[in-house]
Length: 387
View 1: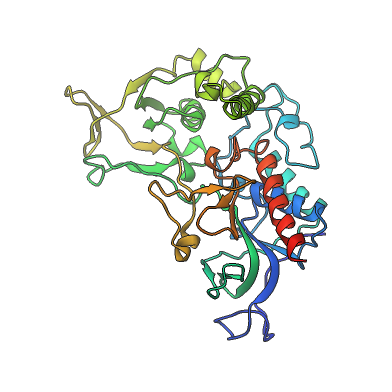
View 2 (view 1 turned 120 degrees about the vertical axis):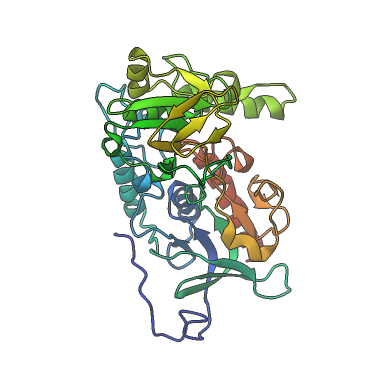
């Protein structure tokens, strides 16, 4: 069954606020139709809940795939398809000279077919603007409002990820720079920089992959806040996930474990290896300021450039949760409980897929499954006790 497109309704029981009607009541509202929302929907469905009736998935995008359709064209996964799958259905294999690391479009197709396969009835486009408490009853309903849709839910799962909150660091002279500045979230393809000099900022995988692409058509300078750490050529996402899982087990047993931080930061996918062979992966320390026509270091060295690409990460997209008053320093919400994803200050709220603070490797395709499962178990267990 294809994903449902949300259409404004004139019935009295649909939009609250726009038409003055009552909110539609469901057991669970899942906010976000990307990999975390789909994995959660899979486990809710497996527990016997009916998509579209007992739970709804609300997605701000106008098409399936979460953030993946908005990433750059040449992005590749760090692992073969078999190690990059959501629960229930393995991603179809991708075979080529990149050790089987699937490209972006393969992932988008997989996520599209995944929500169709499990008939998850994602409502889109529906950008949730707020989650509120509808009354003083701590076991009552939470109100979820987005555009022309209003939902009253006994539990809410926030699975909005981080893509819509790119982090831009503040550097002197940024406003005076006459060239182009863009974040990795806005980068699409290298040909738009052909013949230019481009400064790429950041020491992670996004920076390395974008640098590798852009350097094929432009002169590049790579700057990082600390020397980049490359993983061994044979290490990919499989090893990273196994290491992250081992760290969780070790910490639970009271043992120290450095986790993936002890391995390095940058996975040597084919394009990054090629950049290494071309001598491109030579990083300079972070510059101190931007000038009108480039970047400059404290020792007086300057590098004229036409563009700066900031590959400086993302922050969790939690603005829809502000009415609940749960934000902590650093933009995170304290979570815990048996699932590890239940908001400490609002037990009807769960957060899935934002990174290690909501579950080990939970921001990855392979890693989101365990926390989605524990979240669905916590919700359906509460539902059973109410019944």
